[in-house]
Image (cartoon, rainbow, N blue to C red):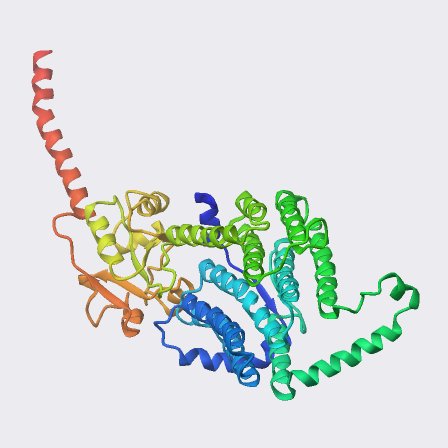
Length: 503
């Protein structure tokens, strides 16, 4: 396991802050706002994120298998699939907010799908432009390092920010534009342009440098990819060193992982033969590195040693990567889903039940059990002492004690203290704030004249709970008072007799 119980709780309560001022966000925001309402409300946000990443896998696979026979057609279809990915990737968070399913789990799953999808996005571009597999390795790592650097910055600033020209939409739109040029003018025209550029560069290079390295222009695309990778790698190292003393463990762990990435690149010491499985495998390892950086920020913990071990074990072994990286992601998702009681690929339904819950008894716990059946998670609102007194009576237990007892119940996921108990009852603002989808209440409130649940009833959110007979707080108080009276009655004659005997 890679998360402790406290870290799972931190993860569940984390709220991601994003400042996105990118140009593409401003331009396409109205379009995305319309698209989200075309989706059924039953579609879970994580399902949209998964579908988005699958679009990139399809785009790459189409270019890989059919690109040589149908270059223009496959490139055009790949453009469409990438645009669909872009749209779905932007819409998933809007769908989450629309149906009240936004959570730290949806944020992490969206990042995971985007990080893994980036591998196939870059591979699609490399396949369309007939770049050698070695170039693809470096460009995939460049994409992953850029994602890593963005989350390194977020770790230090505690929020994610995109400026006007450095958002993910700018990169994706550039990819689509490049594929569009490829589809329209064809590869021969692009090859001619590249040859002219290389010729100009050869003439501009000083003769001494050219004599010292005569193979400088033998593999221009590969040399360019390696150079870009090297400088972005150096920038990543600098970013890692500047994370601050409070993230020292994370910093050293990242540096060790980056060192192994440098070894895998073949720039120093070793020279590995690049293959397509190797490109995907190393891409998954680096994607996992940025993913655990996201987990570290959300869970308030350092980078887990498990990630470092996987980076070390994966050097030169694709099979290790294909086995251990999915195991890492599976472990994270399993722990978070269990801790937050959230399903991964289906819609979340939060049920709300409120009350005073004084002297918690079997009737309350049966109500919790029945209410939990209406959805995925049960939120219980506990009325404070001040509001409870005029409603029924002053509670025997104070609000802190009542909230603690309710929170310890098996079926309760979350306790909402100071639950509203005022004229007019629950309002839309409260329901929206706590992402409530179903409101459960007792039979005595199931009438048109009831004002406590008038608004959720109007919205079609209410569900009626059967009344539990034979047990209530009032009944418990009556029993206590009755027993006290009986005990006093039994003890009174004895005291009288004792008094007479002593005279």
